[in-house]
Length: 195
Image 1 (tube, one colour):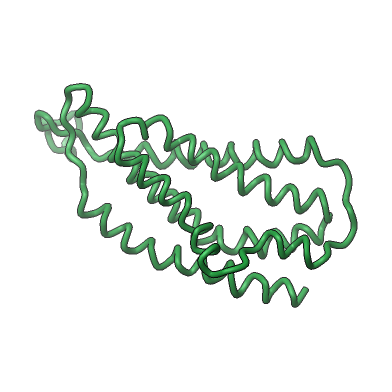
Image 2: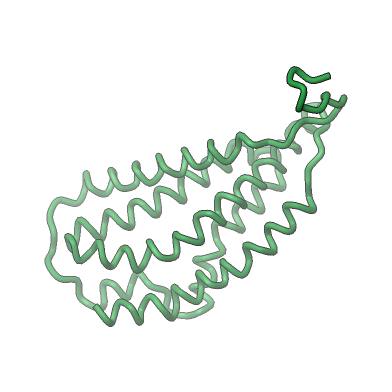
C-alpha cells in the first residue's frame, strides 16, 4: 500500500508520470525572457523615434513558407532532442533559447521605438505567443519525458513512455502552429499597416 491511501502501490520497473518537467521548463523559459530582455537593454541605449516600414517589415517573414519555418523550428528541435537521451540537458537549453529570442525581440523594439515599439512587439510577438508558448511548453514536456525515458533505459533502468497521449497532443498542436504561420505571414503585416 502506498504512503497515502489514495495513491496506488508502486509497481516494479514503472515510474509515475513525470509532472515536474513543465514547471522546470516554464521557469527556464521565464529566465530566458528576462535574460534576453536584459541583454538587449544593456546594449541598446536610446529610442530612435518612429519606426519606418522597412525596419518592421524585416521582422516579418516574406513568404508563407518562411513563416511556417519560423513557427516550426523550435518544435522540430524539440522533436529531435526528444529522440535522444541527451535531450534531458538540451531541452531546457532550447526552452531558455526560446525565451531569450522572445525577450530580446520585445526589448529591442522597445529600446528602438519606445512605446510604439511595444505596440509593434505586441502584434509581432505577443499575439502569437498566446497560442505558441503553451504549445511549446506541452511539446517540450513531452520531449523531455521521452528523453528522460531514453536516458533511464540508457543507464539500465527501464521506464515506459506514454506515446499515445503524446501523439494526441502533437496532433492538437499542429493546427495551432499552422495558425501561427498564417498569422505571421498575413495578419501581422495587415495589423502593422493599420497603426
